[in-house]
Image 1 (cartoon, helix red, strand yellow):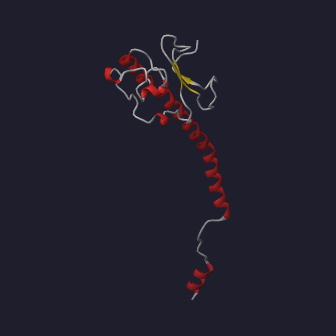
Image 2 (cartoon, rainbow, N blue to C red):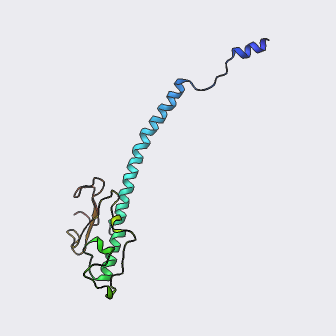
Image 3 (cartoon, rainbow, N blue to C red):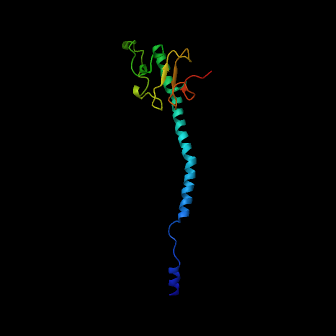
Length: 152
């Protein structure tokens, strides 16, 4: 009997105390405070990299604009000309070899869902074209703009 009494008197510990749970929650909150801002910054940087890959001197859109010039003899008047034959070209000449981009014209937007800014002749690339994105702040002419020219 004595052995049985001792077993009943000893309570088997099951579960965690409130203090242990609070310590774990505190550690998780501390880790989240460091990780979440880094994840947010990584997302913005990924969008910036995507825009640079599109508008940069060797970017996808820039390459197709140059290809258009090689085929037709001049830069397109607008980005729409990369998708549909311009009205001033004769289809029978077959110099327009488009569409030059594999997407719909309405899908040609930067990672922030804004239209790319295209100018020909360019203000900054006088012998070529200017192509840019407004960047994360979605405002033209600010420091975060992504463009195919270097500031002087």
